[in-house]
Image 1 (cartoon, rainbow over the protein chains, first blue to last red):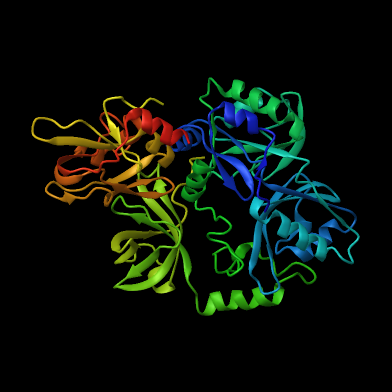
Image 2: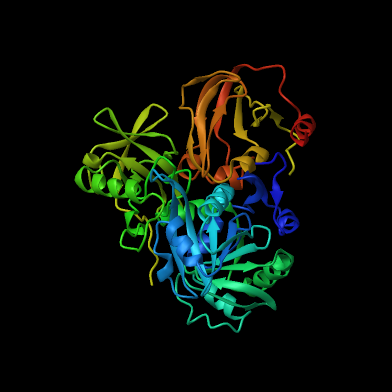
Length: 371
Length: 126
């Protein structure tokens, strides 16, 4: 990480809009433009516009691109159809999670891997190293893309007014090349908010034009610019894990309740297979801590790192917590000992600066949109 | 952002009104502090009868992303806590100098280094 934070192609626009900026993974990013609560509600009820240009894009091409990704990642990437996307993870040999990823298959022999900003270099290095012996090329495309996201129930209508692309035919976790507001874009129906929405990968030089066109097209629908703060509360309500919180190198996908992303049935070896097999058996026989949701009965907010307690004993740890604008109560995701992890378990609390506040154990997610 | 001229300010970003006939002043946090906190979602205010001490914590303000200690700008006895804020903490953001006041205190001692509006403007501009 450099001392001077990097700025996205939309930086000047954010400042014009009066955004509160924050350093995030070496990038100067908008935290919020006005009230983070209003931004959150806009995404749940109307639409929000995000600059996610800090995300790390890596292109993998070549005849053995699929084979490389099947070896390097835990998912069955070869089975992803052209135009579709897959949520997956990259693990170490010991099964620890290096990052969670979305992989788009752009063509038969071309994939785009999208990594978290904080892990982009790690993922790039790992893919490059793991590519040895494969007829495939790993390309750092972090500077090739700006990424804008339009999220919320009004987002299909907003986008439709700017593109001829077949949005109705574009399924969740699919992406197609097209033109939006005259700008060439990879249009993906993905997001991190729990709402319907789109992520638009464009050339950095086109980012301002696209942002302005979306702002204008969304004005009547109530679209507002949104920062990282509401992105965090949106994903938390949707029960989506965040690297560095729920996912770390110290956890395997099975510890995080995401064992389904590991595809043992795929052909050939993959990095972490043996350790993950052991982790899967451990999770089956003697479940470790489980990832659960906690809903506060009171109004005090649990934060990452706070202890989960029961009967005066520490039985877990909060990984993410925030006041939920949708539920109107503080919520948290926490790793909790299996004995206390069942929804409805009585007597579970969170130690909030010395006071044991009562919490209800619930299944994730906290919020699921009506379809 | 305009900081009201008639108030005085602490470097911890509280404001203090002029005292009334009973020697009681009102305390809140400034718009600068409210903006820095983000949306306030929980306010733990001192209780009526509590003794608060200048420069020491007397409560906490929790926002979406963080929790901050609330300091008292003066020493004295709390005569009232703003129940409207306890019920609706967003008042701290929407009206920090008015409906979002936090508590009233009968002052027994106050530090000499409280700032004027102009001095506080300079302090926060830096």
